[in-house]
Image (cartoon, rainbow, N blue to C red):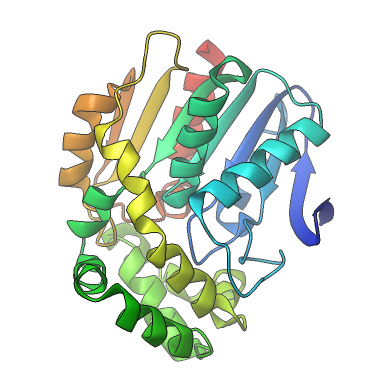
Length: 278
């Protein structure tokens, strides 16, 4: 892996292939490894970057500052440092949110957006973990203290596998993808709980996407949802699409929160088709 140094932080990433740049951003709790099967199918035509977001994978793990604004700031600096133009952004969950926000700030430098299971307040609240956000809203100071204690907790392999199993739909569970070693290692990593909880603590800032209606000059959007996503609600995703107005919508039967691992050929084909046209 390569390292992008930003301020006092190490942001780790991989790059491969040649051509127009495509930047992949993962969801909270995982790393660039979720894209490995997709990347193999695109490097013949594109220059691929897959980043480990701050606090995840092999990137730095500061105690605090896991805000949406910080992630977008780092992405913008990464793109500027590598002199990337006319980029195509592909994100999952919070990676989708970071992609949208970057495009809101600099729409002229983005040619297309692939948003997989985009994270917003509404899509999270309607999912099975939404209760934690509702509880946090009732007593933010108390839960911030609770998060600080839980952030020191390190998941063992068994809990990690169960957490991952929840993120797959029936397709992924049948393949026992929760036992994938490098994926499970993301969750057993020390400091992972802190990163996740700090992201949850900032989730209120993701509500901007629930009411965002892209202007005419906004990059074209393709959304992809796993219909069996338990983390973020696909039904809430349908409501979100009424304002995002994507040019293309894909709904994956049997897919969950990690559809790029469950249906890699199908997802890679959708991505290739959309970014080739845009």
